[in-house]
Length: 340
Image 1 (cartoon, rainbow, N blue to C red):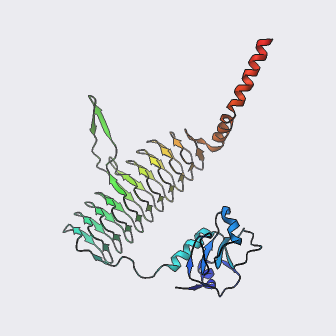
Image 2: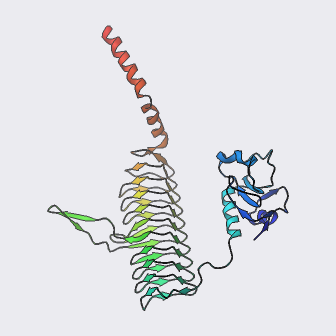
Image 3: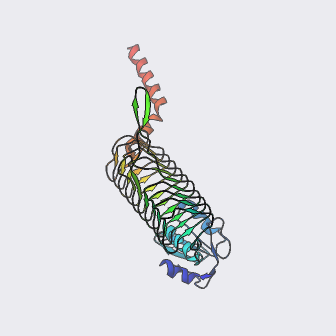
């Protein structure tokens, strides 16, 4: 499938500079692109490749200096987003997962399967579960009792969705993830840890994406909730009764303790750890490998262990890097005092 550069510019609502008749056959990163490919520049680190790329055209930001660029380009306020839209344009129109149930799948008698649903090989779906319109549950996945898989939701192979889990529309769940596993709760009596029954639910709202090998625990009582539009990277652990707001970004290897609440539009960077029973505001950024032990107000960026406001952390780190100098000066002052 080919598209002219003029068609692509119109599709992404960008400003085209150069030959509009050039045919684009594919898409690629700026280093790997070949003749016939469209690429993009979103990260300034790759600016130097603008002059060496073999691509036939490039999408750039409106603030990028374009002097000396020999190939046509499309200006856009958000080149990364524009490139994502072009990927969609080049996708095949045919449905990847056609309607139907594989003969090896095992479904309880009362499972509700709506129009356009795809159920792959060796899928198991237990009683009372419901698969909404045009959802797809791929090979080896499990959907537990009374759980709901929402409209246009895609469940990749080998996903476990336990009982009483509600998944909204347009959700993507990648392989190996477990939704609704028991929360980690025990009561100690006479030196023995006794399991607290985990009888709550999990609710995944619309337009959420969950990466590979993510675990989201069911609530002890009530609901563990992931808000609309939130995106979760691989290898994330979310404890029981956690409440994540809308449009959050949770990066790989984050761990969130039970009953913690996170507001809307917040970012938890890689390997951040949050203790339980705290409140994180909206539009908060938590830096990579930070350890969060207390509440964080709205519109705050924190970093470090323990996590502090980022400018305070930077000052502390700057002083720590000069400890040898401070010790040397202190010993010199001690020597001067003794000599007096």
